Amino acid sequence: MGYFFVGFIFCWFSSPLFAQDTLINNAFKTGERLEYRVYYHSGVGNLTAGEAILTVEDWTEKYTGNDKTVFHITGKGNSLGLFNFFFKVRDKFQSYVDKQTLLPYVFLRETREGKFEKDDKVTFNREKNEAVSLAGKSYIPDNVHDIISAIYSMRTLDVSDFGADSMYQINFFLDDSVYTSAVKYMGTGLLKTKWGKIRCLKIAPMMATGDVFADKYPMYVWVSDDENHVPIMGESEVVVGSVKMELIHYSGLVKPLEFVHK
Image (tube, rainbow, N blue to C red):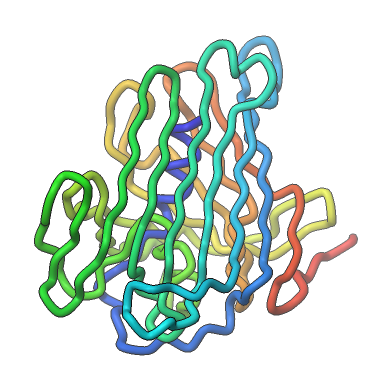
């Protein structure tokens, strides 16, 4: 569950192609809350594996020295039920994000996945192009995001000029390194949910191959085709079975989601 939650987050990493000093944000606001259920499908049927929750709050941060109000965005991923015995997950990511640029000042990470544990604090110094973590200093390019701020920055983009099968390079800072990947745009279509059908953008993020994912484009993600750009569902084939992550509750959106009830 931990791998899939992180992979789902990765699909929205920021692209240098769209870097700006100020972004027009019509996609989200303070008070938004998105809740997801993670399912694992195998030969024995569908099993609830975990949950993921994304929230947006206001926060008066001290890092700029002027008590500036920023977005405090939190992402949590937890395993549930029997999966706690097989592979217990307690992940928490926090990003303190400038409201004008949507670039992060500080990123906090608490990872608990099975026997693996990692905590980190990354402070972004834009003037020096440095990211200072618990391990030391690293060079960063302009406008680089962390894994949480990137989700929300990408949600503000105008995707009306996306073409079929378009490819977009993306970068992100994690584990004291800057990584580059890509997102493939697959088109639009109606997706069935418990509230009705909703028109979505379908994208495929490139992932690293290895023990979990069988190929570099193993995942599809459906995002609402409106100004909210809310991730509605993610689905991936893994080495054994498949995993699905779907929106089960939402509140505090800028605009209501529009569902078709036919």
